[in-house]
Every structure is written in structure tokens, then in C-alpha cells.
Length: 187
Image (tube, rainbow, N blue to C red):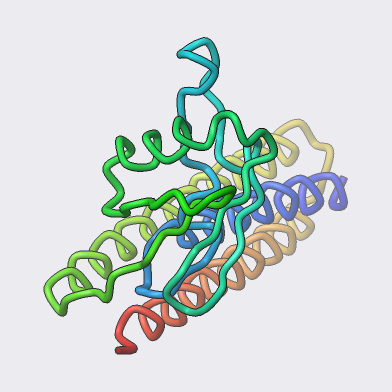
């Protein structure tokens, strides 16, 4: 029984942490990283398909300010470039032969502060998700106690275990935020 509750909780928390990592990865830090555009959806093949960039091209960096995309199908290079432009993410792709180059502009102080605000909002959403999972786990534990599946002592021990897992995961989310804020504040 204990393993079931803690195992499910751990699995759900890991999914939330992974979601937070991906979510924070989409926040631009002034450095070129593939995660900035990998999940941007673009319309290709004459409007018949909407696909993510990661499905259409390899994304890499040549330096800390430049992203380079190499489309798997060179015939859609213009459509990919237009899709990135239309995505309104503040990037201007330039077609350079078989490649698309994207220069990442430096962030202004004002833009850095906006991104930190956005990041803090995303972090709070992650904490809320973790607390919701905790709430559901605690309800399951109480139900097991009322159904006489576990003793009162086991219930309290399990609740403490769940709370410790939740505290650890919120600490992880906070440290991810701290790291991202440091990245954003670097000039």
C-alpha cells in the first residue's frame, strides 16, 4: 500500500519537474539554445500539415548567439523560416543556402525583468501542481485509513513521507528558478 501511494506520487512529481524543465527552457536567456524554437509549430507543405520544428529540422548552435536549422526536407526551408517569423517569438530567421540562421538579440534590462516575472509565474504554476498532487495523495491516505486498510500510525507516517517528497520537489523547482534567474541576469 505504502509503495503504491509513494510510487504514484513520485511518478507524478517527476512528470511535473520534467514539464517545468521544458517550460523554463522556452524562456529566452539571450543565449542560443535549441529549446527556444524546437516546439514552435509551423505550417508546411502548402498548409496541409502543422508540425513542430524538431520534427522538420535539426537545430544546433554555432556560437552563443546563433541558432542553425538544417531542414530534413530542403524544399520546405522557406515555409519553416516564415513559420518562425509568424510565431511572434522575436526571432528573425535568415535562409542561408541549405540552412536557416537565427541571430539571438541581446536582452534589454526591461525584457529581462519581464522574463523573470514570466518565469516566476511558471514556477508558481509548478508549485500549485505539486500541491494538488499532494492533496490527492493525502485524500487517498485518509480514505485508506477510513476503509481500515492502514492503521492511524501508518497514516501519519505516510502523510509525513508524502510531505517530505513534496517539500523536496518544491525545493527542486525553486532551485531551477534560481538557476534560470541567474542565466537571465547575465549580460
